[in-house]
Structures are given as structure tokens and as C-alpha cells.
Image: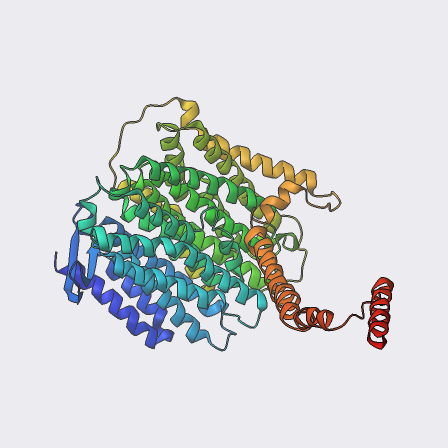
Length: 587
């Protein structure tokens, strides 16, 4: 079995590379590769771990850089998930992008996106991980800016890559630090978990903050909605954004002893999850609401990493991948049906016109809220229980529970506004054909079953936790509060006249400090550079060295050589002296 597993993984990577050359067969290839990738999970259930390395490519005095693949619980579980979701999204994008003249090129980009993510998942050293890390960044840039004729798409693509580069500084710094002081090989790195310095750890946290859009580097994620919907689905479910949290889960053994690092992760995660959930309630673009919900869920994963529970963060990453891909594909079906309308206020009555998509969207939203026995419940409920039962401050718990209420609130808002009531825009009624419903149906089944299947497998170590019933039901109570709050709000505000948003709404709607880097800093930089180029150079340099400088050097010389100063006493003195000299000479 030891030989079969790496052979299978290599086959998958090679087949994907070949699929890029034949994008029209990508759907079938991905389906086949997904089924093949399920084989290695069997020995994995016995906690086996494999590492495979090639000959060193680059030999240095301190480090041998080689291509090395690790096949442990994380990579072997996530590979089939990434393949399954990409298979569904590729099938959906064939329909969604059918009118695009470069549909095959789009599929190639999606496959390259998947390959770079698989490189991150299977990387056994920091060098290889960095190649995949930059790869997903470049592919996201190309896919978000797919419709490059639109100014907004270009801006969003640039925003994504610039924010990621800011975070990448941390990863580059950490890799450089490890090359000089330790080792970039994962296994060698894990053995030094007692002595690791805080600085490279903070670099890892910065990298995860940029890639997983945590608070402070978050504005690029909602902007990334300018790309086509299949891109949003792939970007937010199993690639790109989960890479940051995946990095921290993979390198968790070197982080967990450092209290500073753990506290930073906890605080950052809790802030992100509450802030993004609050921001989602103020938005009206269906894709932006779902995008901000991704940021909120990534915040939850980060909180779990900060609580020394990387397995739980990974479980939530798995369950989240399925229902988030489903949410995006359902919203894509809506958008296509309503002639590219994304404002939820312009939707309505879609339960009647698109019954299957609406049913799938309801299931995905319930899973996101953490409704019992859907896959989201198994991870989200456990996360909140773990948080409440841990030795942590009450601030983290309070913030996370508020975020849970708000996530139920915006999920209900989407369902009520889009599905109930009457249609508020012209429909382009497309039939819910097999092409659309097949991928949606697959994702719906996994959204329902993946939690139960994980619970039934041997991938769990059950611990006996004793807690009061009020704490046990806390997550469910919070969710129900959110649903009721949303229902009441929609009933109250449905017939009100439009008002200007208040400061709090604007603060969240504009993504908090979005204006600081995007408006204030840029405008001030522009003004300072303008003043430097015009006022400093022109008024100071040109005037001092030009006309004013000339006059300043000539005036003293003129003053020395002439007495024409328009002063009467000078003239009188000169006249008197001249007269006196003339008289003396004549005598």
C-alpha cells in the first residue's frame, strides 16, 4: 500500500497537467481522478503517513532543496475534496460560461488553479509550498480579472494580488529565517517545536492573514466577486483562501507552544469572524454577502488554530468547502436567470421560478448556520462548544456567539429576500437542466452527508465533555436568535422609505478601514508628490537658481557700482562733495 498511495497522487498530478492540454475533457478527467483519489483514504484511516522525495535539485552548504511530497491526514483528505469541488464547478462553468468565446481557456485556468493548490497541500518543504502559494495568487489574479474590459475587474484583480503580496512578505521572511537558522523541510522543522523564535511565527501569521483575508488584509475578498461566479466558487471553497489557514494547520506543531502566537491567532480570528458577519448584514449584493460569510468562517478556523485545535479547524475547512461552493453555484444560477442581476432587492419569488436551485440554496444556508445534522453543524457546533469549554477569555466566546447570530441573520436575509414575495425584475427563465442540477445535486448531497460520514469514520478521537445543557444548546440558541432577528427586521423594514445609512452601517459596509489604504493614503501620497514636484522643484529650485537667483547675485554688484538708490540725502551728499572738490581744484 505504501507504493500505491504515492503512485496514485503522482498520477493525479500528471493527469491534471494533461487535462490542461484537453480542457473539453476536463469534467470526465476530474470525475475519474476524484474516484481514484478516494483509494488512499483507506490506509489513512489507520493514521499512516508517507513522504516521498526526489534527488536534490539545488544543493547549498546548509540546505538541499528537492521535490518532496508528504501524504498525511491533511493532504490525503483534502485532495479528493479539492478534486470533487473542482469537478462540480467545471461542469457548472461549461454552462455558465457557454457564451464566452474563450471557454476552454477558462477551464485551463481553473485546472491550473487546482494544480497549484494541490502543490500547497502536498508540499513537504517551504520552498515547494512557496511555489504553490505564489501560483494560486497568480491564477486568482488572472481569473478575477477575466472580464478585463471592465475597470472594476482590473482593480479587483490588482487588489487581490497586492494584498496577497503584503502577506507574502511574512512567508518569504519566515522561509529565509528557516533557511539560515533551521530547515525548510517540514519533518526537520517539526522536531524543533520547543525552540522556535516568535519572529518567523509572526511571518507565518502575516502570510495566513493575507491569503485567508483576515481582518486588516480583508478588503480584497469581497472585491474578488468581480470575477465570474465559478471562479468565486472555487476561490472561496477549496483553493486560495483556505491555503492560509492550511499553512497554520500544517505547521501547527511548531506554533502550539508559543502563547503569544496562539493569542494573536485567537484574537485575530474572533475579530475577523464577528466583523465579517456584521459587514455581510449591511451588503445587498448576493455574491458579496456570501464572500463576507467566507471571511467570517475563515475567522472561525483561525480561532480554532489559536485554541490549539487544528483538527477542528481542518474539519470546518472540509465542511465549509462543500456548502460554500454550493452557495456560490446557486447564486450563479440566480444571476444567470435574472440577466446578471446581483442585488438581492431585485430578486424575489425565485422559489417558484427556480425550485431546485432554491431548495439547494436553503440546504447550503442551513448548513452554514449550523442546523443540526447538516455537515456545517458537526464542525460549527463543536467549535463553539470547544470555545466555551476552553481556558480562554470571555471576550473570544462573546464575539464568536455574536458572529453566529449575525451569520444566521444574513443567511435568512438572503433566503427571505430572494425566494419569497413576488418577482421584482425580468426573468430570463432558463430550464433547470441536467447540466446545472447535476453539480448542484452532488454538492447538496455532500453538504448533507459529509458531516455524518466523518462522524461515522475512524477519523475521530471522541472525548467525554461534560457541560450544562444551556452551554450545549448555546450555538443552536444563537442561530435561532439570528433567524428570528432577521425575520423581524425584514418585516419591520419592508415598507419603510429608503434612508441614508448611519455611521455604523457605513463603517461595516465600507469594510472598516477600507478607505484608509484605498483613499486616504493614496490621495495624501498623490498630493504630497504633486506638491513636491510643483512647489518644491518649481518654487524653490527654479526660482532660487533661476530668475530670482540671478537677480539676487546681480543686485549687490549693481548696488556697489552705482549710487542711484533714489535717496535724497545721498544725492545731496554727492552734490556737496562734488562742489567742494570742484572749488578746491579751481583754487
